Length: 172
Ligand SMILES: [Zn+2]
Image (cartoon, rainbow, N blue to C red; front, side, top):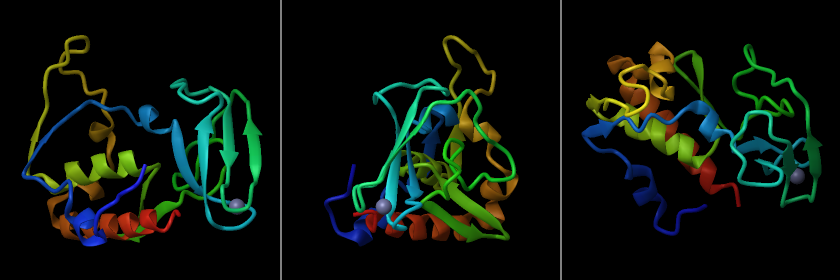
């Protein structure tokens, strides 16, 4: 994962008028979570171990390429609520988080951030009927806090997304 082009281009990417809901679930985003390394403060990754698993309770591994820290997680409890800007496995602060409109805007990884950006930037949001689920709202976009999707906050949220994109570029 990375962006090879100029940072300014990176900031303006993904901002189109129309957004078509892909029905991604938040659970699909947690296979790769960027957090602040508890040892050196640089960006560390939490991935499933072995990689590529999509289950909530798949074993996880925290690795930091900067200081070499490796930690393992294999429990049957994920902490949630109250600490949304931390990962639910090791409880470390998310790397991609920033204050916005008296809240914390956060994303697990670049894919998650990009989806949020596309959603917030679009003025036209379409939902498609899902072959399996019909119109039942299963996607992560139907569960976004109101302050993120409020039209009056759009500019502020897009600025927060800019800050997180720049922070992503610092992951090294
Ligand atoms: Zn580290």
